[in-house]
Length: 332
Image 1: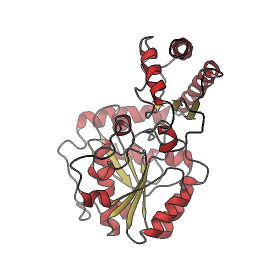
Image 2: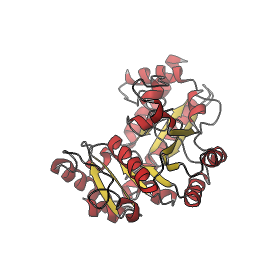
Image 3: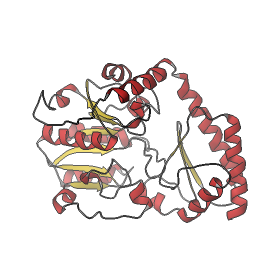
């Protein structure tokens, strides 16, 4: 399984299996801190990296949906070591790194965000972070729990043509089974025990059931790369169809990247958490229920990306587009 992942993903020399995406991100942060000897991390507002204490500061996904701003049980020290910045704002990131010079161990990001809707990195943003990390000796972590093996066989690193230092994965690599992994450059991963002193362990890590499910799934993807083109074409078809029925009825934005898509009832571009949160998300809730009543089960929040799968036919997509037209006539 590890050798298969290495053969598919650029820039992964060593990889460690864990039991979830949360565990993978938590472990990657620990490794970055152990490697650099620094404590602080930077995450982006609206990105979600699991429910470990370090990440529950201005997080997306369910926390955004439930409007949970602070989480009881997280100590002030942990919160103080988590710095946040607006996604797609490279200048603000530069200022934050300068303010905490030589204190930041890692910058962790969803390279294409899926937890505040589908938010696409603006040109130069990911490349700019890579340059900052190189200049300041900061570990750059791609959280590819959503984008890994979805955007391409090599994930966001391959698609965006930017190498991370560490990469995290979630249930996708286990064919939906409970599994995760973190991996990356050898000189950093060698700090993980038993090669180094950064300890990580888990009784269920790398369990045989999850491994064979993942090996089978990833083998299919590696042997059939045309799946990614087919998925992207279907997603573009859905975007065009939805745009057609929405046009003139209500302000909207549809973000799409590969087989990731999100619909926002907004009259302004949705490029970060603030713009996603300021959309008409109450209208999205009505839309969700109107679609569910028509047999279409969408993600139940405007803060969740839609993920198409290749089992969907164009007939299914046409049904979704028609249902959207009917739903809009009902709720508007």
